Amino acid sequence: MIVPELLASDNYKRWNICMKSYLVSQDLWDAVLHSWTPVGVDTKEWIKKDAAALHAIQISCEPNKFDVIEEITSAKTAWDTLKQKHIEKHPEDGPPPSLIDFLKEQGYQTMEKPQSLIVQNAIDKGDVDAVMDFFKRNPPAENLRFWTGYPSLHYAAIVGKLNIVKALLECTPAVEKDPWDNTALAYAAEFGNTDIAKYLVSKDSSLVSMVNRDGATPVVQACGQGHKEVTNFLYSETPFEMLLCKNGKQGSELLQSFGWIRPNANSIQQWKWANILATMDL
Image (cartoon, rainbow, N blue to C red; front, side):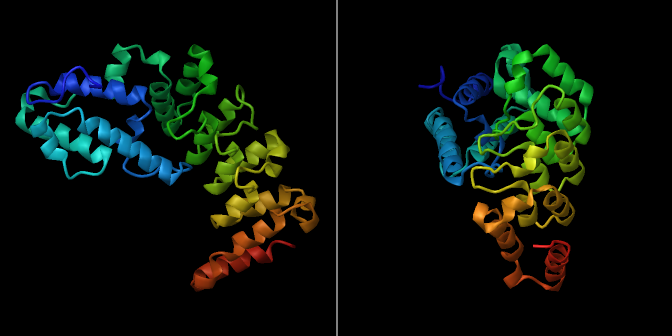
């Protein structure tokens, strides 16, 4: 067994705590938190992770509890169903202990994933003081990764928190890459955060020439998502030599990113793409 006792009718709280601890230790807890594939995560790998988490839950239940989730194919749905069934039968217990409370009791500061939850929450709120205080108190956290694989700087660029980006650049290199070789600028481009893109380029102009694992530069990523303003900016900053055919495929990739939507575009979309093309002397 992967937990001390199988889930029965009278041990949900103990089972809940032990099961959470196991899932976190096996890097499976994110499958319980989310039913969708995170951005940047391979779909096949996510399906395997979800199946592994679901299997762990299934084999940790007594037969009468397994019957409740027998037809369920998602780890999150199975977890939530068992929780709801318990609360319905034992309302006096209230909600089961939260993951964060449990991990605090267990010394969460030594565990990377709970740290990421704390930092992510502070970034979402735009709380610079909380983010920087955390990093000052936890020097090893400079290598922190969220459950998606994003470094803190990249996540701030995704959610559009310029104040956090500015603060993090005091202790994090702008050229830092995630597991898919994307820089923070790549995500600012992909999510259309022009102010952040401009600030990052002002700190290190080499960012515009960096390619990710798919061979795409930030301007290609911005254009592919239809972000006109940030596309125009990045095009003006990208060395023109990079776009020449003799120097690789970046120019053709950029043109393809203009054209992929156009065959099925409505008049508004056609106007948008034509407007972008009109401002670029390719």
